[in-house]
Length: 212
Image (cartoon, rainbow, N blue to C red; front, side, top):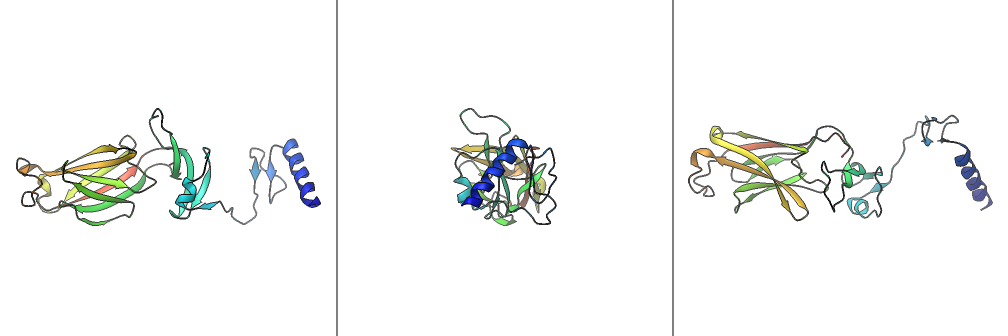
């Protein structure tokens, strides 16, 4: 107990009289608050599951953890390109900068996924006659800062037209993909004998320069 008290007093004294703290070095970088030095050993960050990470109360911008469910570093920071009144602009996001591929896949014109990443799922919306692309947590779709590229391929693809949009359902933000056969658009588009079978490839990128 005495040793702990002495260590605490020395630590407080050190913080009071110095700008930098060094662990593994006697000459910490003067521009840093903490310099771990060339110890040859890595720093182990807190390791949290999705549930544990989302349960952090009072999260502050700049917090960093290792997410054991996603197997990557996450930081708590800005994720919206536009400020939305009444909603937070910060959330836990994977650490990366510049264009980053969030999802990819190959879908046929009847809504069957042939292959793709495990970060999304696509469904056919019979009411609106479009495909719904939903990203798995912690991602959502933002048309102002994401690039969704669609390429029709296969037999009859020369008559296929593609457009994308954004669907907001409560707190969920999804991408919509309109994939139609323009040569038969006047008929009943939802009928199987009208929708010509072909495929489309899609790739979704996040274009934000800020960490996400």
